[in-house]
Length: 384
View 1: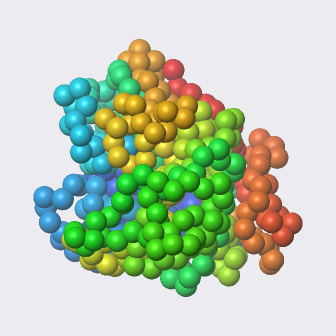
View 2 (view 1 turned 90 degrees about the horizontal axis):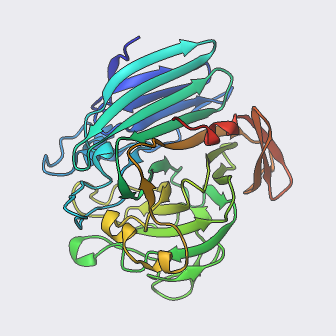
């Protein structure tokens, strides 16, 4: 059947529901959010919605469309600001996939499986992107698939998920699977003359989220958030080689955990955008706070296509910052987002692993465990 539209926080949005998850996807920019997970005794909506969208404010029409819709998670092609042109291509911030209207194709339900299919024809670099949002009854996860076809050439890409944390300092504890390189953005993320402020020391390297250099001297713990109120910062983690990687956030007081799963052979790095009231220019106005971007990408930070494709500091170390598209071979990007209840005493996630074809086991540093109904095999399915 054809997808239907509802107005959600000022944006026409397509809905999709299973017995455990209710989700919306905006027509403009294809943003996944809001999303509500049914965790039994409570429903939890983990993703942020920009304050101006929540209030349905009209912001400057000259700002990129993505800012008018800003919420949840969205697919970026190419990922980044894209201020520099590349081989005659001038892409909008985070690409046309994050700024144009998506065309509805189909909404299907077959034996407990729900799927929303949207499509976008790109113009800056001609091609086709198919978006599939897939839910399964009984499962604790959103399965996302983007298939890029009829497009040729180098391209950075990625997902741009944004979580809204309780405002109390350290309400969430962040952990990841192993990474081989951690680095703060090599240049200042914000400019005080423009009303933006950052706290982390540019270009500083780190081996653990718990000890990262500050501009003012000393160190800070990136695994505890919200923190450093009044600042916005950006850091990147290059995942260990393999075919499975994860990021998790434990909300111990609220008794649930959020997780994102990926194949690092497709999405090689994770960008952490810590947005905690550090931007005072329009439309942010110092009110975008306690938001964490967990952005699974293959890209050179958030800079854009030109910098991700050319020689850069990460490529010099042998790390991948773009993929190569071939128009005769569709390229599939799969991504899983989910939530689960946690028992008392469950603290920061230490390990997350599939235990069968339909479940993952999440183990905390304290030894407590949680189980989520997730089929991790989805990460490796491709469309030909």
